Image (cartoon, rainbow, N blue to C red; front, side, top):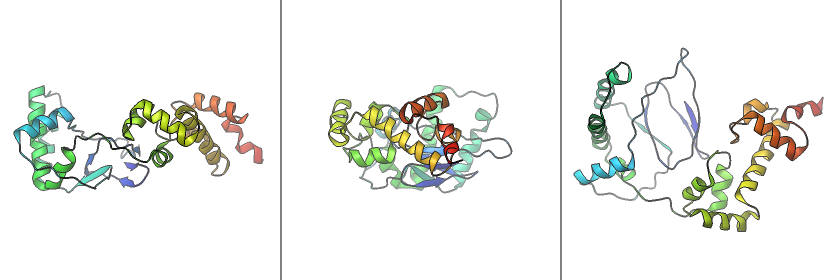
Length: 231
């Protein structure tokens, strides 16, 4: 699996272990091996982490690590832990809620034992701080998320986000996002000779028909006709 967060590319190969961090926008591409793609996902939600922290005393310090994925070195304890789950993700056995928390706690203790600095990431419950709105939007406009999410990730309420956005870009977030994505689409079709089917999802459009409709409304020509103009 290859991922990109707007700043850095990450490549995950079979057998890799990694931590995907909350509040990070990431686009990824999966590559099947022998016709399949298999993964094991274990989520540490905030409620679980706060309960864990009440039972275990850790000194939490600020961290400047902003990577979207943190890769974990292969370790015998982690390997054994994953193998212990095999009857549940590769068979008919079911985990009840109590046992789920016990297994999650086991893994969390292993991770922190092997890398104590991870506690500063796991137990950071702060909301995103107020960041440069213009820089963030120009990096992340392709992600198909709600305005509420954009506001949260820039450290603003929705009303403040809309007000400051208008002051910076002199238009509304919705209109700006649409225009930005369509301009990028035109460039990719015209200059990079991409196909509409190759780009519409990556530009934040949910389906091809909607992309084609708004593209033609903006430019007076359908996406599939761009390449034909040069013939």
